[in-house]
Image (tube, rainbow, N blue to C red; front, side, top):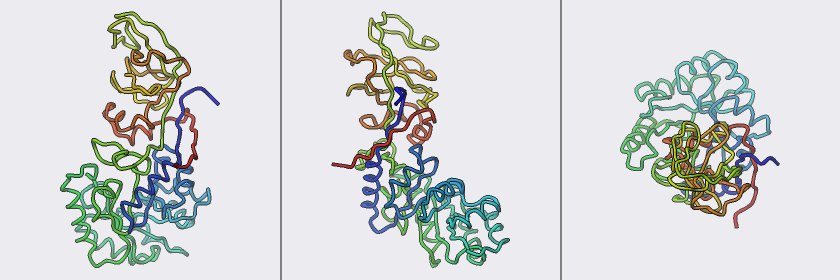
Length: 363
C-alpha cells in the first residue's frame, strides 16, 4: 500500500444516504444518478453498492454501456440521450432508456425501425434553458415521439430544476406549476425532483426522484452540510504529513513567498496538491484536519504538496494522516473556501489518488 494521498469510499454511508432519501420521498421510485464516474466515487462500485435503487441515471451512452458490461440489467436512463445513429443503435442493443430533449433526436427516432423499440423520456424546459422542449413546443414533440415506431408508447415526462439549491426560490414553484400545466392529461411516469427537490419540494416528488449529490452525503442547499439532512459523507480525502520543520518569524512559505510566518513556529508539509485534485486556488486559512484538530493551509498549493500551520497541533508527527475533506471536515466547507462547489471537488480527484473502499456497516 502506498503512502501517498488516497480517498476512502464508505459504501455503508452511500446506502445510508439512499435510505434517508427514500424516507423523504416514500411514495416515489429512486433513479440514482451516478454519472461522472459516480461524482468521482467510482461509477461501477457505486452502482453495485446501490443495488436497492430502482433505476440508474447517467449522462452518456458510454457510461450506460460500461454498466451493462458489468452485468447491471436495471433500467438505465441516459440523461443526454443519443446524439448519433450509432449511439441510438447501441442504446437499442443494450435496452437503455433515452431522454429526448431536442428535435434532432426526434428526427433520429423517426428515421429508423428497431426490432425492439426504445423506452424514452421527453424533457420539458421549465426554466433551466439548457435542454428540453419549450412549453410551446412540448405538445407537438410529445406527439412526434409517441408516433415514432422506434420509441415505445407513452414516454416518461421529465424536467430539471435550476434553482433547487435555494429553498426560497420562487422559480422552482413556477417550474413545478409549468410542468403540471404542460403535461396535464398526458400518460406516462413523471420525474422532476433532483436532490434539492427531494428535500425542499415534496410536491415535486412525483413518480420518480433523481438524487445525485445527496447520495454522496452532500447537502443540495447553500449554507449547510449533509449532516443537516441526516446524510453521511461517502468520500474522505486523506494524505500523509511528510515533513515538519521549525521556521523563524518572517520566513516565507511556498511559491511566491506569499505567506510569512508571524512568529517562530512549526510548519508541516502534507503530500497532496493540485496534481491530485486539491484545489490550487484555496486561500490561506482553508481548513485541514489533523489528529482531530483543524490546522490552516498556508502558502500556495503546489502540484504535490501543501503547507499547514502546526501551532495548534504541536504533537503532530511525520506519517500522521490529514483529512482534506470528508469525515470530520465537510467537503461543503472546503468548497466554499475554494469559491467552488462540492461537486467539482469530488469529481476533480485525479487518477493518481488511490481509492480504498470501506464496506463497514452502520452500528
